[in-house]
Length: 300
View 1 (cartoon, one colour):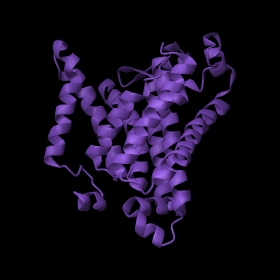
View 2 (cartoon, one colour):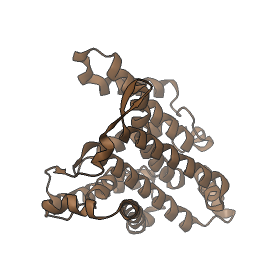
View 3 (tube, one colour):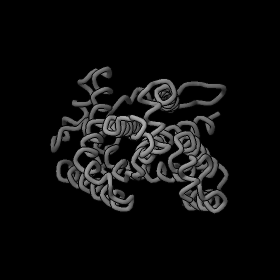
View 4 (cartoon, helix red, strand yellow):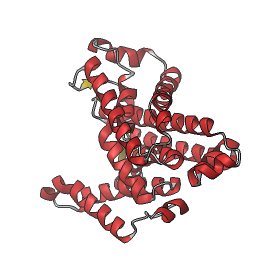
């Protein structure tokens, strides 16, 4: 039971990150490598710059019903601003140019955080009471892991409903399949792209809240590992396939926990190496991904 909960909890974080990347790629064919920096920026939005003593006070004085929407709004707003300032002017550029621009944007955000907060990790006590364990079928499981799984499943369910049963969701799915044809059929391009970036940024903020609750540390580089694994999940699931990205996120979470369990103690240091060897094997077997969209298959 403990291993199952660990896998679902870690997989939820990876799935949320992969979905945020896959949404933008589906609409703009952009791999947004600034996603990890946006996660870190959402964490540091809880901290007053250069006043470490107030770091916990800023997070603690606000009630949760204000704090959570505020951080989600920061993530969505930052992502929308990045689209308006940077990526809107590059819509006609090739994917490599947009990818390089996303790298530049990510480094810019990271250096702004470095300027404001320094490179030293900062302690941030957020919802520490959730670290208490509960008894579940003979296993003692941190309540925060159950919260992470619940938030992940609830968010994925809400997005699934949005994409399948609302007009704007159908427009987003149509744009992900064939953006040019969708525009010819009346899809509002700017509205769809803006909403896609807003949802992606809100997902980054949700990851930020869950991460800082688990670790209790704010670091300007904390979003990069999640972003890297989320990107890998997007590739394994099939670039442009939202369902494939989510499934691959949970798969990578399960494989990571499994390797941690079965590998000898001395070999656990190389867990990520074994994980990425498995990723290479999957891509050699299915270069288009596990659940590739039709447009991805046609490009390959």
